[in-house]
Length: 545
Image (cartoon, rainbow, N blue to C red; front, side, top):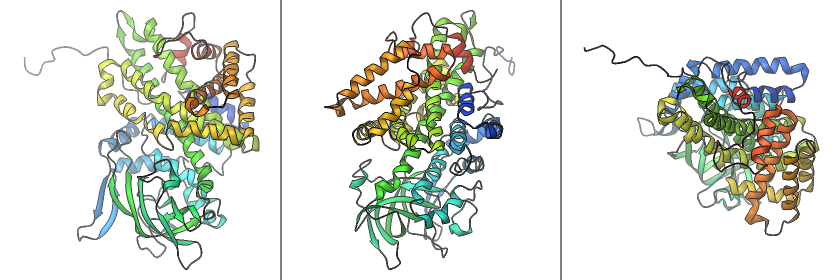
């Protein structure tokens, strides 16, 4: 009869909403506890739980979906034919970005445990909507570059570290907060920024230049300012390009088109042209790469954090689904084969989170030893964690079966987003070559990494054997470029293993060492060896108790 249901729908998991994304992540909570001084720990945990509850709320998750469903639109001209070069965003984008700014995702540099608390927040916020994290990351990372010029830092740093999202294009001096973007790469060079052809001509006022050229990738083009590289008379140099000049006039910033990307749809990535564009020099002429090196390290760490966040959300969705889904006479999560898959995914996610937070703690420490550690560990972690993100997202989607292939589940958005951080801020080969460069030029970096790894010596024989294998790789650097990925993978894995052996529950460390170093594992997820206690791993990864 019309209007009557043909059946009653059962055995459908509830939506994963209404929970604390931070508090439910045991590996993340433990890492924050480990790396935060006792006197500020309560404050940090309360701050992160507040953000975690927002991230897990139905309203904020709807904002994330809307920001991707209604991507930005480019308006090059107004109704009268005047060039305006503006990008329009859905209101949900502004709500997401405003929440990220107010949560301190651009204000790590001057707060106690600033990098650890921000790293945890970044990992949490990525799980809702990764696109808005791009301008948050660039704004955060611009601070160390600007600090090469004390006058510029004094002018801009208070705006960049503000917790006020002040949207709209106006002179920066009139704004309570500002965001930064970056324009480094060009068509002919890509990651080889020394191939840039954008030219910088000195103007009469000291420190000011006129830029002419193009940038192939310029994310967040509605930001208040941009750090760009251009060829000055003295060589490749870093410049600050404001969108709006001090007198209120628009700087020449011609947005030619927005990129049509695989994922990261909510975030505008543009091709821009400079044609007599006003800029201020940052650092010394000819020292552009040196000026941005700390900025690059910060954005690379954010790539690792972003991938760790995506991995965690993918695993949380998979575990949640399998905990609530009945199949073949019992809970799907209790089936031995599915438990193996979920436990394997959970291991990869926890290892990524643990290593990424260790790197954030090194930033907070700031000692010479920790800076040397970061020089090698950041590109290694960026390489490995971002590489693992895509297979995790795909496998997690498969855990939902056909439902994971449907947009409403949210998993397809995670799958599309998952390769991005591996490409951004230098793809895999760039990271591997950077590790080789550090090994050859900065012996202190290797010493610092080996010291970190050595803190777990004797705790697990499989890890000890893997460290010996790494030593063998490091002892033979002839022809190392061709096997650089292999070397970097081993370095990242032993760093993760060292941290898990010291800080994770015994069953987590045992499973990681058995599968990643023991040699008894297949090529896909869900091939952990027999004899491991996997139920606690799945329980530990459960997002809602």
